[in-house]
Image (cartoon, rainbow, N blue to C red; front, side):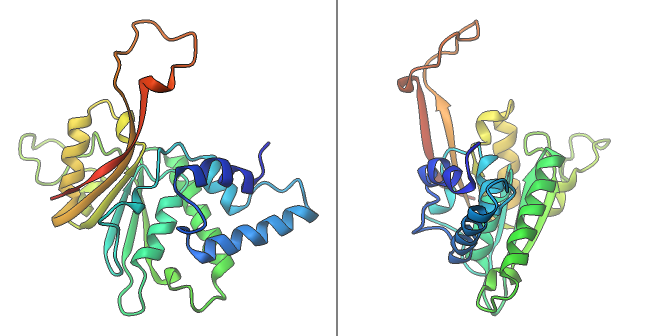
Amino acid sequence: GESGTNVWETRGQALGYDEKFLPSSLLQLAVVVEEEKNSSPSRNDDTMEALFRASCGSGCPLRLSGAPKPGETVIDIGCGAGHDVLIASHMVACDEKAGTVVGVDFVKEMVEAAQGNIQKHRNATAKDSQDSAINAKIEFVVDDIATATFSTDDDDYNTKPTKLAAYEGKADVVISNGVLNLCKDKLAAFRNIFRLLQPGGRFLFSDVCKFTPLPEEPPTKKPKASSMLMMIGDVFSS
């Protein structure tokens, strides 16, 4: 299989997670891991590999205008293995009042993987007093943005709010990376994303879209690149 560094180079960097953007502590961890691999080639559980091998995103939304600032609250919709959560934690960290990053995924196993990856990073950087991201608050929630319900849903009194309801109106920034194309009810997904934002909040997303009609039968060949568009999304404000 691919080494962690190769996965990062071929997949991560191609999607915008390059050396000029990634936090220095994560880059240092990648170097340490590569040195360990030289003496233990069979090892395949390092942070860089765990973060990017599971990535199915389309680009780094955190590079868009309106990126998170120190002290802000960020909610990552479809957090996967947690690479955007980790990077956002560095963006919101500060000595005075560290911000909060909330990773959301509807797959429990992915949330557990993200929690493990964040802990690996924090364990590796715990001795670095200059890594203020350690002070950022990181939380994880298992929920589906397209089917989440909130306490202010008055149309059905029998509907019990889901876990995301606790974050309604709390986010300065909501990010999404390659998730909206997977949502069957995209209108509901967008509606719920904006319910998470506080007034003046920003929604940063990257995704893929298809601009030719879907065939009635599953394709037997790989679709042409011209039929797909990888899109770094715009910035929406509530």
